[in-house]
Length: 242
Length: 79
Image (cartoon, rainbow over all chains, first blue to last red; front, side):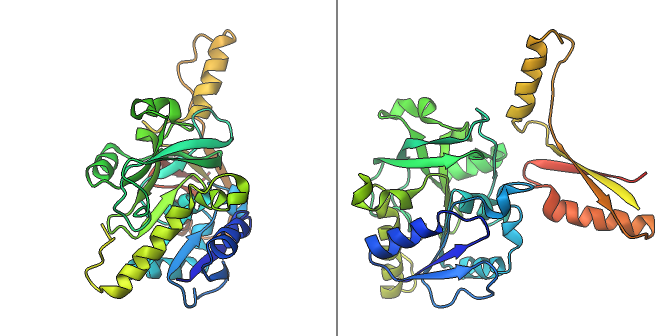
């Protein structure tokens, strides 16, 4: 299970991803610079957080035109697993690999804190190692994390159970209080229709190393590894693909 | 030749920045202000070319990059 982690100018969570995936979870990790035209041998792609191109114009708007992005698109279209975290989520939306957009937090403030997330769909390639409706604690750090899309898209996401993570309070009814940025339906993370591309604002890679006190995020990457192993065993059907 | 592209949020898309400015103005005696929406103005300096060509160039860069069609619309303006 090899992860490719892409570095854009302004990415600042790429090293965290390398540490979490490599040193902590023990997976081989490839570093791919945005100017490269090939991903190389890998089983999954990570688009990390940060401020690619200084967030100029719109967060993720310029990164979507980087030389590596056509490769990421091809990889995703071939069914490969792609995860975009924070700025990575913004880039995937800008690139059209995920629906909707991420706009300025309703509070107009950059929010950096831990949030509780409910795993709304534990039958995806990114969440199979969580329990259904499990509540996990993961940090966020973003100024543009308010997820918006038109009514039809939101209805579709809900109907197809493609809202994978939702901001939550300790109790199920606490959702509005747990919403840190004004996202529609308190959406924190979604997958594409095929189930192989995930975007989320919270940072699972920051809660993998027991040294930082929590390991709630590790199961995202373990789920991806399990999905890839499953794909290798049975090809097709892909058991974890929704 | 000079040209301008205006990028604005589509109606219905939350503009917290505009709301904040609107509320500030209303709280500071500008009771006649009903709403404020904040957008972007992008100024271009282009090589001289036929107007239609400039318009199609600006439409191309606006729809592919300057505006995100999910949340924004744009308007090209040439003097």
